[in-house]
Length: 322
Image (cartoon, rainbow, N blue to C red; front, side):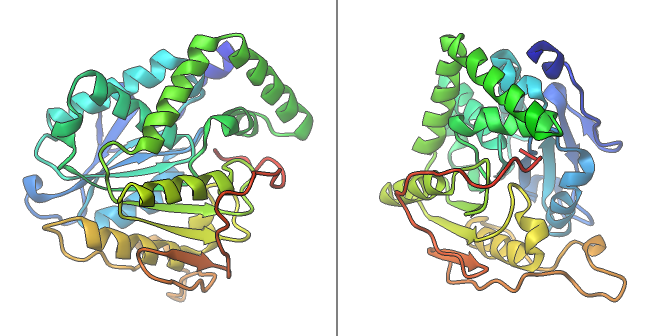
C-alpha cells in the first residue's frame, strides 16, 4: 500500500525553472539586480499543489524575493532516499547557482522534516558553517514532529475517518518494523530542534491543530530561546493545520513582514500588504483581527496564549493538509 502512495505524483508550476529534485524557481516581480535579491525556500505541506503556495510566493515576489519551492510527495516521507536526494539537490543549488544569495526558509508541516534533511546533508558535507551567514531567517508553519507523521500522511491520502485510521495504524506498524527508517526520522527531528545555524525563527501554530502538537512546538520555541536564538511565534486558538494564513490573513502577513524586516539585511522593510489577488472585489482583505504583542513574544491571534511544557492531548480530527 505504501509503495502505491509513494508513487503518487504532484503537479508542478507551469512557469519557472524546473530544478533537480522537484524544486521550481520563480523570480520576484520587478526586482532589482539578481545578485542582491534574497531567495526563499518554500517547503509545501504533503500533497500541496502550486495554487496552495501561490499566495505565499506572490507575497514574497511583491517584496522582491525570489522563490525556490518544493511540493512534498508521500515518497519524501515514506522513502528516506527521496528526502535525502531532495536535500542533496537543494544543498548543491544553494552552494552553486544561488551561492551569493541570502536565504530565507519557509516550511509548512512536513517541510520541517525536509529542512532537517538539508541540515543533515550540510553537516555530512561540512558546509554548515558556509551556509550559516547566508541563512538569515526561517519561518515554520505548523511544523510536525515525528509523532505527527503517521496522522499527517493518513489525512493527506485518505478522505474518510475509517481509511485514515487504517493508513495511520498501518504506517505506525510500517515504521516500527523498519528501525533504520525511524532512526533517520529522529535524526532529522533532532537537528531541526538543535537549530545548529542559530537562525532567527518565527513559528505559526495553533492550539486546535490535530496534527502538529502545540505543546511540543511551544517547548521547542522555549528551547531555542534558551539557546540565545532570536525566536518569535504566532499562536491561534482555533486555526486548523496549515490553514493559519486563510484563518487570519492580515495578521499572518503582518507578523511575517515584521519578522523578516528585522532579520533580512540589505533589504527594504517588508510590506504587510496582502498579495494582490488576495483581496475581494471591493478591495477589502479578510482578517480575524488578531493582536500583536512584539517580535520577541507571542502574537496572540484570537486571544490565544501559549502554555509551554504541557503534554499533547488529542486535538480534534484529521484536517486534510499536512
